[in-house]
Length: 249
Image (cartoon, rainbow, N blue to C red):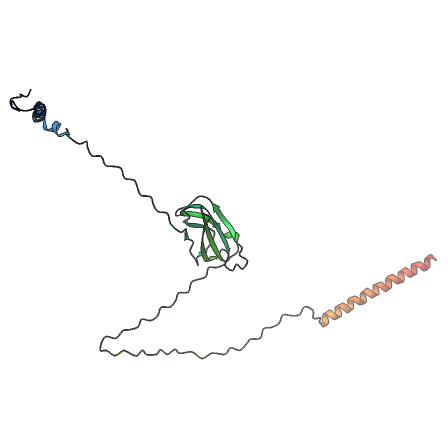
């Protein structure tokens, strides 16, 4: 136990004597304690605890998107329509299609849903059920305030039963040479294109097919003989009939 004579005098207040004695005992205990155990004692403020941070919410896109198919694309079979419909205040979406030339404003429903979609298939369009031609897709997203956001994908070419056209690349322009300072610009040499003279091709007459209604002399004689025989047989039959009638009388 700590002695009072070492920590105070006769005129030292009692409260200071008790505080000094407590502090001296604590220091002596720490001095005699092993370093590993003394390091684990905290005097004063409680240990610091970091407050958990809340993740910031991901902002919703302002406009819906259709990532596939794209305008001008050739389509065949069952085509997935990919995109995003999750916008602020989303309530529902619908996908319809129409002919590219649509004077009557008629649209045919493909899909209607009240579930939002993010970078996933919105619908599947079976193009084998319609005739080949050019079409337009329309996506309508309805929000909670009644507002509707409309998106069009135009010039979609359905080619299930007809060949797909080959895109004709645009020819590149010849690069022009820029003269250096003090150097005269070169005059381009005009190109000469030789055209071969046209060769006239005489038309070849095409023979007409044989007319099946033509009657030959052989056919004429055959038909005449056949008619004479029929007439002779008829006269003989009539003569026999008349002879029989006379005998009966």
